[in-house]
Length: 232
Ligand SMILES: Nc1nc2c(ncn2[C@@H]2O[C@H](COP(=O)(O)OP(=O)(O)OP(=O)(O)O)[C@@H](O)[C@H]2O)c(=O)[nH]1
Image (cartoon, rainbow, N blue to C red; front, side, top):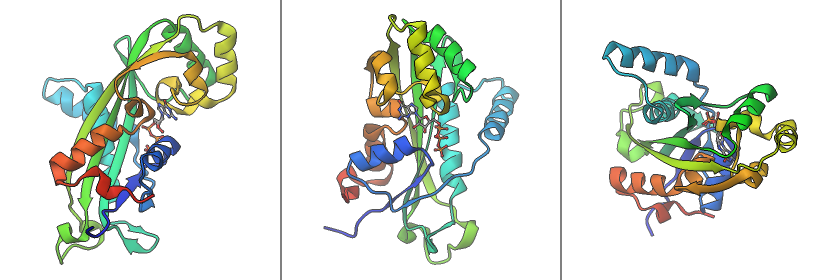
């Protein structure tokens, strides 16, 4: 068995951490990316418009995941330089041609549910991995001048909402506060599960960290097998 392969999670998402842990990986460190997501999206929209295009949900979550991973490049974690892979993520919900993040407000979450029940939408999760292993950085790397090789992938899943969700159930769900700080105003693995008929695609992609997609990304971009990261 070679030296353990370390993975750092550049995310404050409790669900991403729980998903990694359930998949057998305790991150070597949790780093808050501290990225101004609105500013990144605004910049991306301008760039796409300048080249005559528009920002797709796929590109948005990929670029935000990349921005979050790159934001922690060169940082110290518990006083030590990062020595491993850094994973950043972002999720957004595409419904009726619009892209939604977290509702934040109860009235917004309620409105979303009144529109979503009986219908479906696509939850897109972007993932970006940086090779921040000391061996990959070479001897002269140090401080914030670090430039790591990176690669990303998006995994999307269609989420089908039950048609039978009553107004009183929506009110009760919104009152719990759960839907306010999650992309799309729903969860499939917590209280929201009661109102989700089915998911077409990887469930972990909906939760915010697609384990099969990250496994493939590590293998295809960096030649690392997922099980080399198992450490719990
Ligand atoms: N538990 C759970 N969380 C979900 C689900 N769908 C979306 N989320 C969460 O919704 C949040 C989407 O916001 P993001 O901007 O991607 O991430 P964040 O929570 O702000 O955390 P950062 O990675 O630090 O930006 C993430 O924390 C996802 O894990 C779900 O079905 N279950």
